[in-house]
Length: 295
Image 1 (cartoon, rainbow, N blue to C red):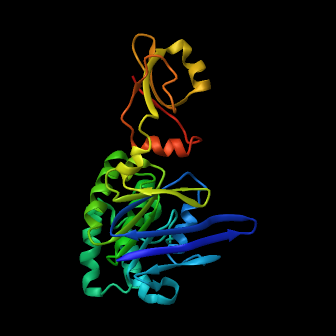
Image 2: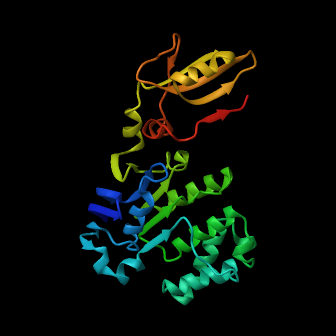
Image 3: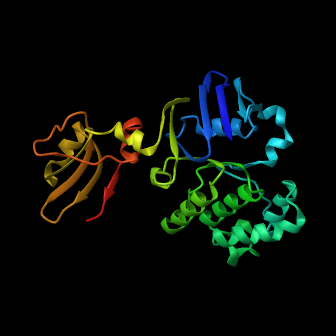
């Protein structure tokens, strides 16, 4: 089973949102990493056959998905950044409605809905209106609707937005189990959400796929580029002006522990750190927000 993109492009007026992307997805969880505006959402909308490519095509096991039509939609699940629903829908009503749209057999609908509600910890709110739920709960309802037809291909755009840390852990475990013999593509800029469950990752920047590989293969690119050091707090500003500091933690003795990216140590006494996928992401996308750790 494979989902293959061949020279896929999409132009909006004078902007090329996706630029000649060729990528083959196989079974397992795939992470699609990129900053806002990288083209991830446009790429996924073409994979979902919602947006028509300017050039190229997407193939499922050798068949053009656009020509497959209904047959493709029956095996496909999609969570967009914003999914539509009527304000009058309860969680249960909405999922029953989506199940009908996806032609899920009536005799299986209740069982599937109850299973998803339990795994996504939504059972207690199934009779509540979606409009009254928290952002995290709404996101979980969106995840549930994408999985109702037990899709062979599941594509999710920022699925963990609004989820608290515990919910994100449960989501990762659920998706890791679900991905057996399926293709799951998760677009995110929260690197930790896919670092340990992704079979492979694709890095997207300015409409192009710039790197593809397992987490280990990609992280290896960062060896010798990640450093840690402790500096006086009063000198931190000067270091921030010349170093790409990605983490900092205040210590009790007027010192600050920093983690930074550089081709060379730059600071006397700096130690090479074990790189993580997040380091690679910040290397590719230096404009992303830095993080400050507590004491």
